[in-house]
Amino acid sequence: MENNAIELKHISKVYKLYDNPMDRLKESLGLTRQKKHKEYYALDDINFSIKKGECVGIIGTNGSGKSTVLKIITGVLNKTSGDLKVNGRISALLELGAGFNMEYTGIENVYLNGSMIGFSKEEIDAKLEEILKFADIGDFVYQPVKTYSSGMFVRLAFAVAINIDPEILIVDEALSVGDVFFQVKCFKKFEEFKEMGKTILIVSHDLSSISKYCDRVILLNKGHKLAEGKPKKIVDMYKKLLVNQLDVENVDRESDDSKQELSKENMQSEADKHWKSMLTCNPDVVEYGEKQAEIIDFAIEDELGNITNIIEKGSECTIRMKAKANVDVNEPIFAFTIKDIKGTEITGTNTMYEGEDVEVLHEGQYCVISFKQKVDLQGGEYMISFGITGFKDGGFFVYHRLYDACNLTIVSDKNTVGFYDMNSIVDVNLEEN
Image (cartoon, rainbow, N blue to C red; front, side):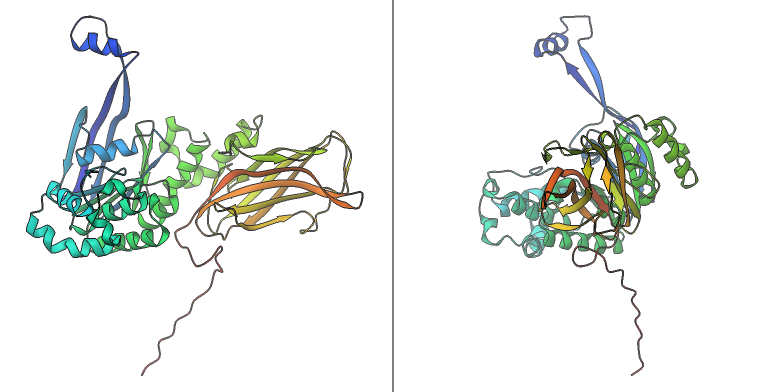
């Protein structure tokens, strides 16, 4: 334990679920010998340790137990069984509102949080100016926090958490409500903490941040720890998990050498399914057109052939669509576009631009169109749209369009300015004075 900041051994968290409140009452009063509850394991025999000075990320699907782990480590929840050891003073930023009294002003909550961690009033006095400068919410610090916007709230909460000199910093998804400039400031502080040899444990769906800042990543699924290791390896496994292509029973067999083989096997076993069934698709997709030619399926594939919404920046990916002609269609044009989450069209192309013309698609005929490219988009979230258009009776005609059909997540450990990376090769020569 001397070199570890946190140790979890056989940690489980079990909840009792009742069909109705009366069953809970009967069981608690001993009025029945029958067990009236079902046991739900939010965590089941979790084991891992975090060394001092490490930045470790925890990822997993919703309901995997990520936040439950953090709450047990910070003492917000009690474990059902197992052994937990924490070596160092913890400062935690969990879900919005945790540890704050909504009736108190911002200043009063600073002192409340500091005292809960173990600081005296004099120690908080010495750090107050630094905290308020980092939060940068002006005179709102003198107002009750119940009047704050979510952005102001997280600014103050994070300023308190990170400026009271913790030895272990624990952060849940709360940073997602901060603006981009505040997030830059926070991650700069993370780097300073790492250089100072402090420990950071972070839960996030932002895989770019996980890849860039974490030394190691832990993958959870349905209360179980599936794997831990270097960010790239674990993110690859998470991508497979999202589309049900990860063999969770034999996850230890996953290795760099076997990825290509596993990918082919998975693709063959899924061949009878729609590609889009293995993607996270938009339930509110905007669809229009008379469907003389119709988009019946689409996919995003990584460079190993896995169908996934998550692509690594700098890698190759294939955007694929499958169409069917319901009548004879002359010279159809197949297209895709990529937009950011604000709706700005970033890039896109079509078969006409690329010089891959289709003379005619006959009634009942199917056609698969594949666009393969290197991805140099910045890390972040995007939406992909698909379309079949053409020229009919001298005018432009839309046969079928799917706007914002699915999301595309680009994972990056290096972002530059703007929408895409120019892949500059930089050479710096220092000259003698």
